[in-house]
Image (cartoon, rainbow, N blue to C red):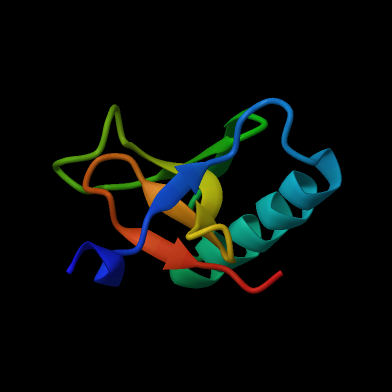
Length: 89
């Protein structure tokens, strides 16, 4: 049954910069579509924050980590609850 679970792997230093840049651009576009008008902040090469009014957000921000699911699908994962959003790159 473990084979049915998808595994998210965050990008790290050493991963291809051109791929990470393309995934970052796709993530920003996706967040702007999901949360129009909210301010987006880049924390590092692998993490994006977006303004949130959720009671569970950290200091008014939701943080998203960029990475891949099962080494096949580009995605971002919200740190506070682990929600994964798939990206088209």
